[in-house]
Length: 586
Image (cartoon, rainbow, N blue to C red; front, side):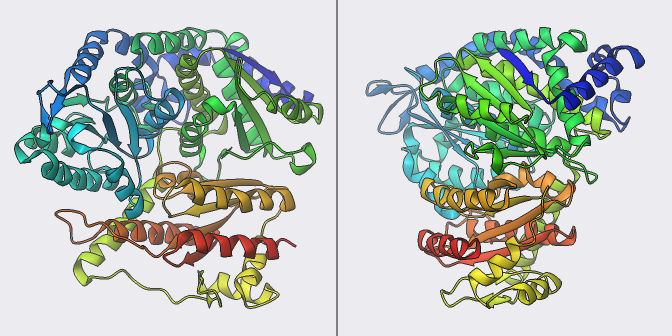
């Protein structure tokens, strides 16, 4: 891995000053960092969350456990859905990982980047409560030949718990109650609720996390290593790449790429360059999804934050304001080098660019550790605790209140729409914000209200589309289209998140960071719903409660938020919404 900073001189001088400060004026902060000294940050208990600093060394000592699991995955065989009968085939055919946030994003990067390995099962991630997406995941695999990984640090997170309940009952139907547990393994912290459930249900394996590692810093713990193992990746090689990053992260600041990166992130954020736009070679595009959570959830609090911008295509320099830094992670020999010239144009326009080159996909694991250190350093520069996430908890609390209310009354609280468009699409906002939009809208239509909403965007703001919809390619493409139109017309950063997964990622920054976001929440009716065994509510009710809870918290923080509710035909609704964007942006 190589890293190069191409920075405007003023920002370069500020980073150099910060590096000197870390080296001399504070009795060597790098050494204090490695001693887990909380005074590097805010002395708010940060030392309790620094188990990730030496996780690579500890994992390298546990190679035998990974080898044993890999052998078990390859040895399991099936005939008529009976584990252990190898006369028909060898090995699991699929792995379903049920998780959310830090428990699912690194495994998703592995699945997307490395694909299926010879002799090992295909790894699929289930990190949604949308009933159509849950059903699609169920229909994609033959459960009789599937290993299900339930990943939940606390064991109390709603999404993996309800997903486990559903898939365990489905597994019983596929292989019988007596054998269902042998198709499951858990990754959880010791003493968690999930550990108790796994033991009671006879899970095949239980692997433990480290309670001193928060979810978004857990990629090199068992929450990343166990999925890597069952997917057939070379764990020794990936840890060796991570170990190289560990060595370089112990150097003096001037020679330390991770610390230099963190000093840049923090210094830039303090000077209001508080959006980081991630470009990657197509072979490693999903790395940005993991970086989103790490950066946003770590820095977005106390009115401060670094807002990550992932999967924006590269535009001409004139489109961008002066509130961004750019990172380009390039794979040597990429099949698509067309981004090179576009990034060079940004550099020529005096935009700050971080160029990172990797020559092997396994170097991603060195990237993971480098960015973890950099994010922690940035938190120090910004004067925050990068290891807590108070606003993620607020959304969870609101969702629990709504699902509890549903259990009592059989319905979720209803709000009156501020507009029902001729197309049938409904709009929702607080009374005060609705009145503001109504007064500014050129017409009492979807396009009119949307124009008034987009006109609330000012220089230095960002636009975020928050879709509580199935994360299907067609839906994403439709939202990407109008997201880019907003960027090109308004010259601001844009974000796209699918709920509920972004609630455990960028949602922290959207609620706890600076009030610079203009939000469009997109919800829909459910053409199909899926019941959750043992619960009074369905997956459709859960995701509706999560959307309502998220909107309520955004509104309580004074965010500029508008909800668009589509019908049950999501594709048709998004087409209508796209046409409204075209009209609103004329």
